[in-house]
Length: 312
Image (tube, rainbow, N blue to C red; front, side):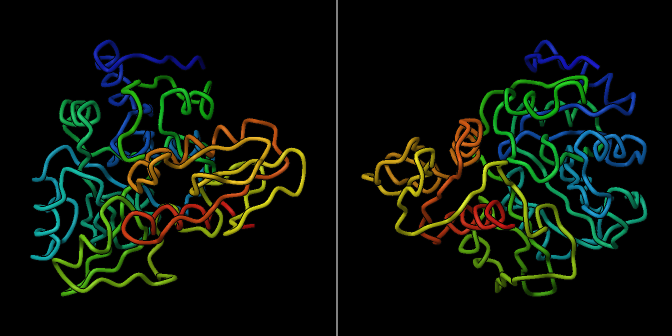
């Protein structure tokens, strides 16, 4: 299979034809690039798992083309509807009891479904034109660094998928927040651009260490480079080919240094995280050392990704 990269303008018709033919297509979202296919078509979703080498036990997020799909896919609550009204379209995924229309393969056999509505204009155009929900996990091989540019997708999935729509770099650069909505409370299953502080305006928020609900990115090791990664508060190079992912502005001398953000801006750091990790991973280093970032706001999401990337 030859993978083609096209602009959204030039590739829209082809993308819609492929989706209608149960084929997966890589699309930009505001978080990371997603590998999209018809979420209500089990055969199409199976091709996502195949291209990514993703275990069938790992559920897919369903991206809706419009708000009126929410009650068709899941049992809603006033709290869920309030969160959707505030944060959609945007980088918040809601986990709710699923309706029978959602296939087992999409939810990994669970009785809940993860739903979001993307704000990225190119993704939104494809979704609205297709007029059906799209399953769209990150467009990379399973467990690897998530892609934030079309070039990253091509490096991961060249020859595995037919088409990538190049919509430029992703704005947020890390995956959506995943929130399990209970009666009167919210459980964060994955940290992301919508922070715990944002959600506390609507209900009490819990951030448990584990959950009975399987969600994307919930495995211990995830978002990982091939090069061993270590988190160190006061990093020092141990060998001649050590690389550093730096938060401090005057870090010690490493063979190669990438900065989260030269201005220590947490949102910029989140947007740069995966690109910086990928450049370090491709540099032929012996190890990567990551300085921790402050865990307030979106910093909690960055640290969640780093701990999974460092997990053995």
